[in-house]
Length: 242
View 1 (cartoon, one colour):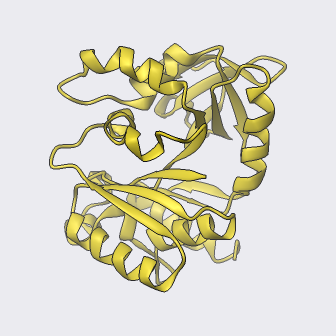
View 2: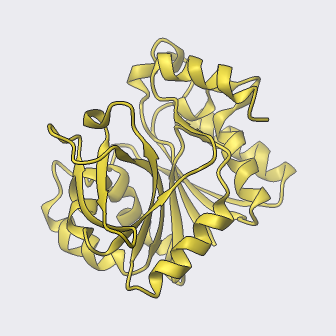
């Protein structure tokens, strides 16, 4: 299994911390967030990961080089001189998974100890129902600030809206996906119409996949630590999770 670990964001909401380090290397009890992610992948048998970089890219590349020297994992670094957007990165780096039937996509600014194998089992089950993407979901306290999914009784996502003014549900996109290679057919249709060269999963791809996606409610710990407040909360909570 191969994984895209999206880590290129500038981390503007985490300033001043991210003025000197990239968001993905922000420490949680002395361990960089990226290391927590890579350790999690290895624990669940994943040993092939692509990390995209942009902000403080040299630091991420150096860390990845040290990490893979000490651990049995293949890490590919894809530097973006100009940010491509989450879906743009997947499209640009599609050769990384060109022989894969399925692959995963994770946002690296999440702090989680989720069971990736259970998520993969869910995806393999929903593929039999013609699902082409499985989306990790969580209960949002402020759904207007999230991508919101509405499910039917079989957990099929029948609508998805990024940051809706009037949310129809509290089930929010966790930035955790498992997809079949069929999503590249949709990315190919979208790619000629890039918004200033940027293609976003939440705004551009996911809404048009409604009816072809299934939602997986994450029961383990998960927090987006992309803001100062959420980072401090995550650091406090993580001590009780490990």
